[in-house]
Length: 115
Length: 114
Image 1 (tube, rainbow over the protein chains, first blue to last red):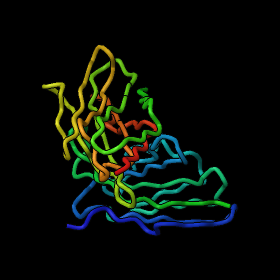
Image 2 (cartoon, one colour; image 1 turned 45 degrees about the horizontal axis):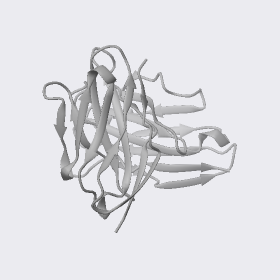
Image 3 (cartoon, rainbow over the protein chains, first blue to last red; image 1 turned 90 degrees about the horizontal axis):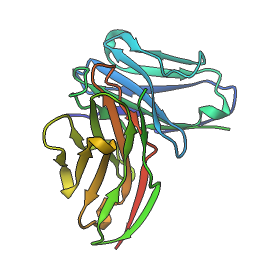
Image 4 (tube, chains in turn blue, cyan; image 1 turned 120 degrees about the vertical axis):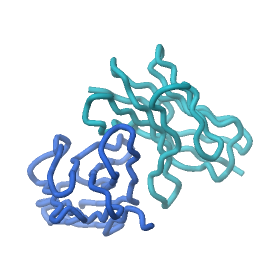
């Protein structure tokens, strides 16, 4: 069974440009999560989808970030326009059901560098 | 809101040395506790977890962690590390009755010299 995949693995862009990150969860997983880790700091929650609906987007830093999950399958996270402080590793995770007893499976992350 | 503190950010050991990584959390209610590991070039993966019951939890690859409720701690241990344990280790907590979104610590980078 394929795990969570993310594309691209690395992205280097200039301040002011737009970048779109993609996450493909494990097939059949209704729950999809986005996290971000800024260099040397905590992995921070961004948002949670249940199928195509945003269940919790309390961690989204500001309105330059837009996440979508049309059709409840893959998800995209767009940053527009990118700023220097958006640099970091963006992780996606999926789980079959929500709740504390359910393991989230993580993707390899996308390393975003904003110059 | 809960928070997680990992005291050691960088640990360097020789093979066969014993390992203990500290993790403390702040939250007054019932929690689930996790340790995740990210090997170089690989995905973040679950090492072990505690939900209830025996506070000494055994995980994969010989790792274990002990939940000490009175100390709000969930330290990770391994009696004898191997070069292949070189990785970054993250402690995480989520709260019962809340969103179940885990709160992560800053991570500990472990380097094991052969």
